[in-house]
Image (cartoon, rainbow, N blue to C red; front, side, top):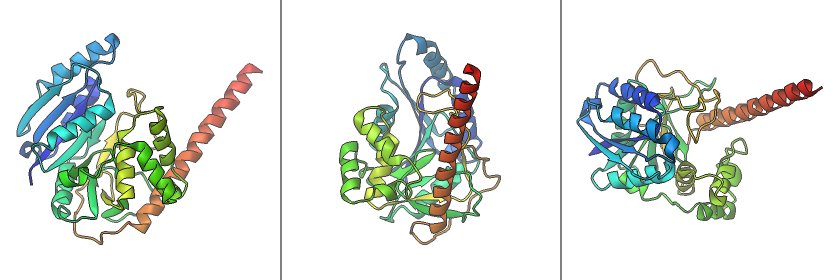
Length: 300
């Protein structure tokens, strides 16, 4: 199977360097072609940051081959990623997608490649994902969840053809099928809200459309029981990330064994995800209440 790593970068040189170093910590990194997609500056204030990123990526070594695609215009995250994936599938059978804030474990590439190989011909599996929520549950070594995800992931060319960029169409199908509550992890997540905001133009999330496309097609994604990814962009540095720590995880200190398991959504995984989303909401509202209380006390 012909697989490439796709790295999407913009204006964060320090984050980008850390991510590349983490990829190079994988013993098999030299076996992969690396395609880097560098988005153009949104305005003049970002020129220097974009130039710094481009200066750095021009020095990268350690992969089988390296190709750099520099956009003169600012495409934005969605267009950059969707265009990059489409470009890569002109030459590759499968792709591994990394953004400039996705730090990976030294065992990440082996897990992803093992999953791609093991489930390549299984029509029920749409992707492999490297991040797993922090949870108190003792999750299995690997497990499946319905839908798709976006923090350090991979998919095959045939499966990517299921991606539907029309958010309104996806939302209508969820409503018609009476699956909104299930799509929201039994009401614990805000996925349908994000999809509605994408439809209304309040945000432009490619990831929610990817998840909805996979969910409606009743496809599954393979997850590791211990996270092989840290998102280091939730520090307020990115346009699409907030400043919060509820998603912070320690990277697994040992490899993930990828063996054939029942291709069905994990009940334990679903429970763990629901509890994570529920606790995240509670933490978020508690922070708001504390902030309101602080401001009221200040104004008195």
